[in-house]
Length: 146
Image 1 (cartoon, rainbow, N blue to C red):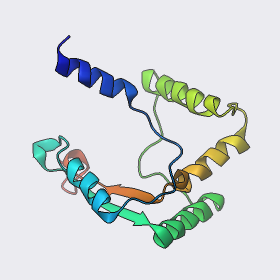
Image 2 (cartoon, rainbow, N blue to C red):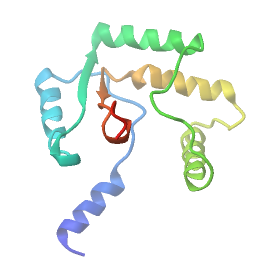
Image 3 (cartoon, one colour):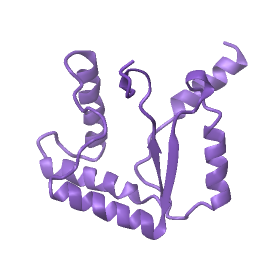
Image 4 (tube, rainbow, N blue to C red):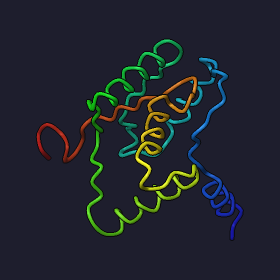
């Protein structure tokens, strides 16, 4: 295997989705650097079709509290479908859920435990910053229906 392929393989295999973060905020310069690096990510026609908003401090806390209130009041809604249909995507969803909740010792039947994980998500897993990504409607989802 070539060195480039080996490095890519290693990078992909060590990737993970953190569920705990250090409480130390990043500097605005560090955040700006991360966003500048993200602008080099591949996208359709190299357009990087998204807008990013970073919330920190009191704004992050207020957003989290509003999200938690909405969840507790049953006023939450995803911006995307949670319907995986039948077949391989639904099976992958079940497998992922089993790993995530199983790592925390939460059984599928433990609805309160599962809700606690959702609340952690709405608290941004205690990260000092949250990045909110807003993609535009393009292609089939666009206003002209193409």
